[in-house]
Image (tube, rainbow, N blue to C red; front, side, top):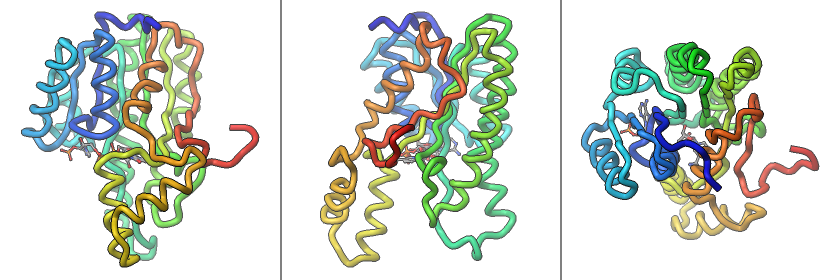
Length: 260
Ligand code: NAP
């Protein structure tokens, strides 16, 4: 299927590894000139080189923390008028909400709600003028099915989801779409770290915990970041202009409902 993206440009935030990297790789494979961001400059540079040599596409990199103005300015200076924006950042830490102070909440809101809103604000009018824009926010399955010890993630991402519900309808007539992708467990470093912590707490091996968790999924396995990235690319396709304001769960069927 030709996604009709050849010659387009994209900013993929937080993309030196994991889900962001996978999205950048698939978009680059579709002929999109991609700009990736991340805080660790050496890793980001290496990822840009890997994606460039795997796809032959132009891959720029803009080091910085996307939760800060400076990090966003770096991304926008490398790619001032993107056709595609994939918003992403690290997730807030787990814990008991009694231990979280205002400062902790502000950090979570900055990374998982206000940074994507600031990026959308910076690019959406250009997309409207050019009559093409595809924005995808990487959120979490926890938006639909809250994870009790990830309260800051549940809260901040739900705030973003509510905002996007309104904005997506305001820009749809200009062929600018905004959708959210909600990952369940995908095999990335973040998931591996979470499982290492769970294994330690339970006095079990990481392999045991991993097998247990994978078996809980109706799919019997974790998601592959490439599967996630292909859903992202589909939402960015030229022919996906009538899909907007949606929250697409990618969780192997873990969310149990007759209707999505
Ligand atoms: P990951 O493998 O840990 O990768 C995170 C990527 O984001 C890295 O490239 C990291 O690079 C970059 N990053 C993190 N914070 C950043 C920031 N403030 N500014 C710029 N770059 C930043 O994580 P992942 O599994 O791909 O997860 C991506 C998002 O999806 C997270 O919000 C996570 O909570 C959410 N999620 C993941 C899963 C899953 O199963 N994997 C499930 C639900 C939700 P640097 O550290 O160098 O900045």
